Length: 216
Image (cartoon, rainbow, N blue to C red; front, side, top):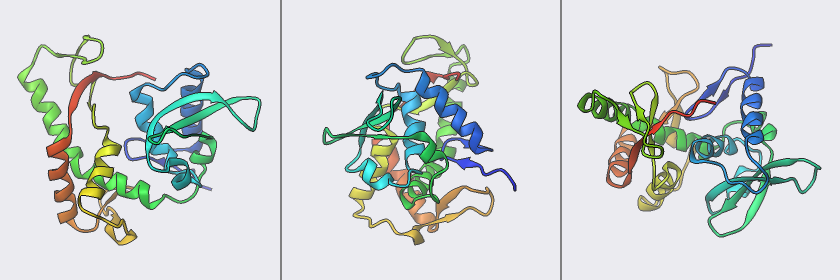
C-alpha cells in the first residue's frame, strides 16, 4: 500500500509517520502551560483543520495554542485558547490520521495559494534592495533570502481568511474550491475571480515581516 501523505497548506509530509514525528517533537519542546511560538502555531493551526471534530474544536476562532496535561490521559497534549476565552484539548495523532480534508481546510489553502506567488516576489524584491541582508524582526540577526521567512505578523493569516469571508458575506461551499491540475494535492479556487478578490483583500490588510527561518 502506498504511503499516505499529510498535506497542509504550507508543508507536505510524504508519510504520516513523518508528520507524527514532527508534531511529537514540537510538543516535546514546550513545558506544561507554555504557549507555542508563532512559527509552530501557524502550522499547528493547519494540522488542526484535519481533526475529525475540527469545527467544534475551533469554535469561534483560535487565539493561541499551548501545552498542558491531558484531561483523559496521564500525559500532556496540545490545547487551544479560543477567541471567546474558552479552551479545549486535541491530539495531533487524530489530526495526522484524521478524516478527509475539511472544507475549512481547503478554503484556507485556496486563499494561501492565491497570494503565495506574490509574496515570494515581494520577498525577492526586499532582498534585491538589501543585498547585505535583512535583520530578523524578532532577533535582529541578519538573514538572507535562504535563511529567512516572509511571514504575516498581525493580523495572522487565519484571521485574514476569516475577515475575507465576513467582508464578502460568503457562505463557503464545496463548489468554490477544486484540486489543481498542475499541482497534485493542492487546492485552488474554482473561479479565478475569487482568487483575485482574496489577493486584493489580502493586500489591503496584511502586514508581513522578515523572520529568521526556524530550524526544527
